[in-house]
Image 1: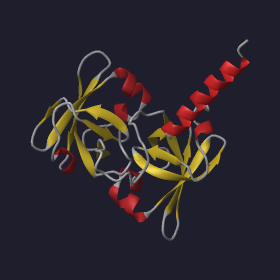
Image 2 (image 1 turned 90 degrees about the vertical axis):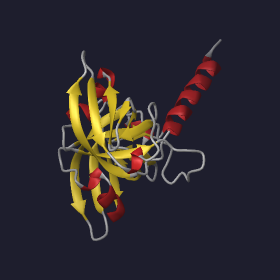
Image 3 (image 1 turned 180 degrees about the vertical axis):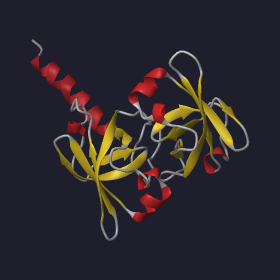
Image 4 (image 1 turned 30 degrees about the vertical axis):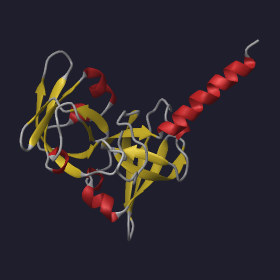
Length: 206
């Protein structure tokens, strides 16, 4: 589990074919490697990956075809910057919101407007509409692993505000119109929906 508070920007050192439809991605990092061990989880642009190999300043993960199909990781190339966050511990403050690192869909940056103290960004949601119902004004969403507050929701799109700290410390300060981003909606909303559907089914049962 993660909180959506990015710890550092890592740099992709290599992306290699590991056979079948899988890739091996190697990332240069410092903070997130300080206490990292084989098998630990690190969120890369909001996607939970497992450390399969590590050296002093780099770590490597295997990325399966299903993950490549559901996220933007398949488009990463050597030299790209990525958002990194280690899994949360029981001693940490939950500064963002509960983020699983399980990407729900890929959105597209539709518009970006710089205000005096922040940027307003409009993101197009997946065309199948599967995520729309989980988003509410002032609710939470993870964009490329960054915990953000929803400014407003319209059909097929969500608007978020990016403060200077977020712009400086994450890749969202570099995203441009047309870029694709990983989206994860609030898992609590999904659990509530599931529980309500079960209750409704039980009430309708003869």
